[in-house]
Amino acid sequence: MEDAVISIDIKKEIFSANGKIVLEIATCIQLGELVALFGPSGAGKTTLLRMIAGLVHPDSGKITFGNEVWYDSEQKIALTPQQRHIGFMFQDYALFPNMTVKENIRFAQPKKDERKIYSLLEAFGLNELEHRKPAKLSGGQKQRVALARAIAREPKLLLLDEPLSALDSELRSGLQDEIQKAHRQSKTTTLMVSHDLAEVFRLANHVVCIENGKITASGSPMELFSNSDISGKVQITGQVVNIESQGTFYMLTIVTGINQVIKVIAFENDIINLKTGDRVMVFTKAFNPVVMKM
Amino acid sequence: MSEDFLQTMWVTFKLASSTTLILIVIGIPIARFLAYSKFRFKAIVEALVSMPLVLPPSVIGYYMLLVYSPRFWFGKWLRETFDIRLAFTFEGVLIASVLFSLPFMVQPIQNGLRSLPSSLHEAAYTLGKSKWNTFIRVLLPNIKPSIVTALALTFAHCIGEFGIVLMVGGNMPGETRVAAIAIYDEVQAIHFDAANQYAFVLFAVSFVMLTLMYSINKRNESWKML
Image 1 (cartoon, chains in turn yellow, cyan):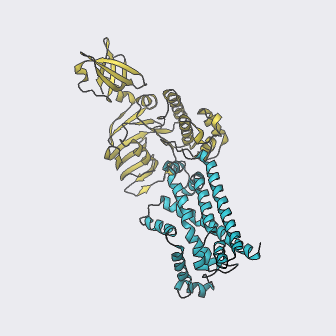
Image 2 (cartoon, one colour):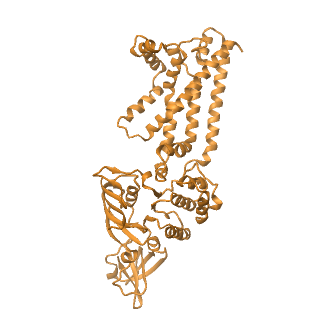
Image 3 (cartoon, chains in turn brown, yellow):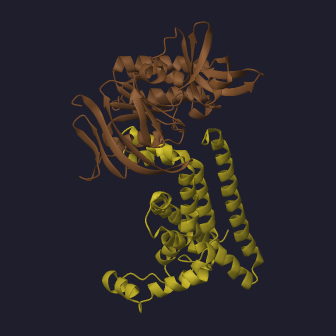
């Protein structure tokens, strides 16, 4: 606990798409980690991120960063977002429409430094676009600018709300590299909301699963999403998108974490508990791939 | 052009530009308050600001006269402490005109601010920018069309001010006689040529102002919100 950078222990009633839920989160995040908040939409991930940023306040609880108290309902402490020195990347990017790409980044800098602006533009492949206004950018370009801007702030903590959701898979993996590179270079503690399993595997060294406002599991992606009891050589995790009866057996269509579609044969007793949307693991055993609900 | 005509036009434009200038200064903070505040009685403030849209000018004019009157404590206090008389003076008309044109300045700006996604000011806050800095550098520049609309509507509306000026200011040449009143006056005196002159100028100015407003806003559409 001593080297925990961020300790969060909060409670808040929120109204999500699934009705009223109580967000009750207690966790610690270590220095320099890249943590993924993983879970279905409406679970309270974004609200948690916004509470850490100081954009909304919990009903009660405490948030500390190192020995700084950011929020404490008992002591009535609530630092403003400005005082927390964070970088926040919004789901809708929130680029300033009146400023060019370069001006957006410059606006974020705590100390103006043209050289740093250009190295960021370079790193995110934005050189050609520096004089464009956000309205003239594609979704992927906007996300790159938003990320560059959050980093330009030189934050103590980087908060990313579904940073790569609007991208196709190619751009997505390119930008995943950027996030990883930026994280390695700066060692900035990063918290990322995601519901993409592949993304979590690729980027995060720690995952916090949130469902219905509660933490259901936390650990490394390997610990959480692959079952070490299974002696299979190949393990693939994915989501069932279709179950089709073929007479004596069933054909499962599964979308894997790397967005590949695979088909797996399963028998009646394999699919008893399965429905479309379930997260499953496919692993090889002897000759056949076997499907197991996670 | 007669001297009377020039004098009346001068008073008209002086009134319209002074009103617009004063309203930029007080209208923007009011619009900001109405757009963002969670004040419990905000609806009352909102209703008060919008009253001139629904009330006849004579009602507001009547109350203004009452307030200005030396028989009322405020008018009496002004008279006794500062030797200021507001009824039937340019200053008195100016104050009435500012109050009466308030919704024309406040409403477009308030609506503009409300239409901006909240992530915009949140993003600026997370970047460490103060509320003031965010308002000046992020929010206001992104509602330029609303500001243009507010300025044009306020100015054009003031140019054609009639009822409230007549109630509070009367019809004193060089002091409170504005174009819209002059037209009425000239028609009453069967001076159709003079009335025609005033009417044409008012028509032309308003038309130019509105055309300008629409064309500027059309150009601004290219960088409108996403």
